[in-house]
Length: 122
Image (tube, rainbow, N blue to C red; front, top):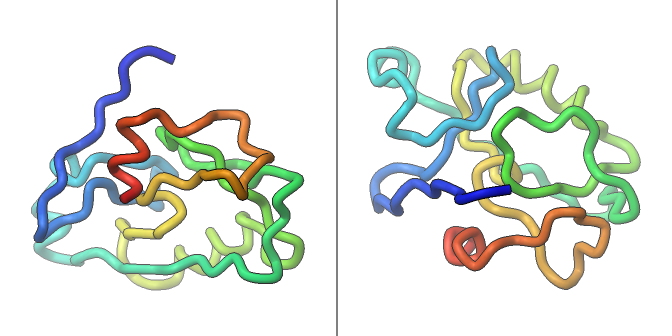
């Protein structure tokens, strides 16, 4: 996989944002700030709870995602993506795409978190 470039931790900004238009994860510093000044960004938590499907990975994850995430049994990623496109901002901090996912409980992952991603996760 090569070297992973993890953006530094800034207390006043997230490491990554999801570009809904391009369906791609970007370091916060690479997001055009004129768009953020105009639109801001949304913050969304994707609650797994009882709908998590830990035996199957989410289909059609965004480009640039450095970790695997579980699928869901009832609320598929494509439907969640449709909902995100209605909130009026191009960029979102969506926890499963902007905080490294993984750990002992996620045995379905094909990509283990690197030590660098584990640090970013914490």
